[in-house]
Image 1: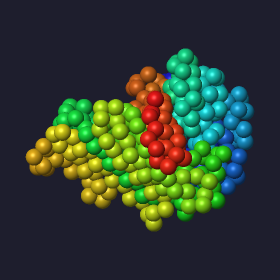
Image 2: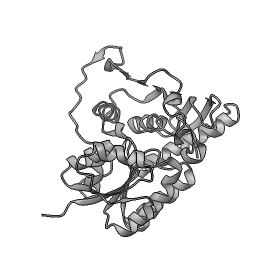
Image 3: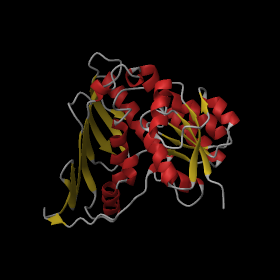
Image 4: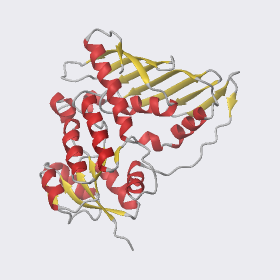
Length: 328
């Protein structure tokens, strides 16, 4: 029997526990080593991840990459460290799954895509909505032309981000690279383009920082390459989580509301029966499959490039009072 893939973790914060469990559930990979400089984060990880107690622990990821024979790494570190960590791993022939955002500049995204291509290694981002059956259903329906040409999209993410990330690296610009738009908001930037298959052409944005060093609330107006319009609201000072999505086409629409599920309408406004196929994939199982050549990455590196293109444009627009910025 072929040995299990050996995966290293760069970072062991809260989300690392979910990655550990999903990776172990594949039965084809194991966590072989961890890099985590924080004793608090490390202790919490070891307490909640059965079988991780005896793993080698490093304070420096470069030492882990050098000493451990790894097939892949999962990067769970502050955003501005992603570029160098991904670059170093790829240069050593190691496959990479990174938490979002992939990187914090367009230049870095393009450089890593080129390096992954030349090395023949997998580079993926952990955008879990790609694996959600509802989003997959909408994407497949749009590809089939069920709602015609997409003409308007809208998405809202409300989160207590300002309060929950206070006094953490996420509100330190040098570590986070930006605020909530670059953090949990990047999920929505990504999914709007992935589900519709459309690329953003122009961005107008206004932002509020609430005396922090990073953006907390963002109001985005988008124009896509096919002429479709969109609104994206990232709200970080909300009291609790809320999310919804609207996609309107020339022959129908989707309305995905938190707590009430998905509604699909045809061109006459009548409800269409929604039959969502079952799907149990996730970023970690897909990562293992991609390394073993059994599947293509569902969240490829180009998604990270598209997200930072929109994000950089939004930052530039907000810095200039909302003036439109072309996404090149």
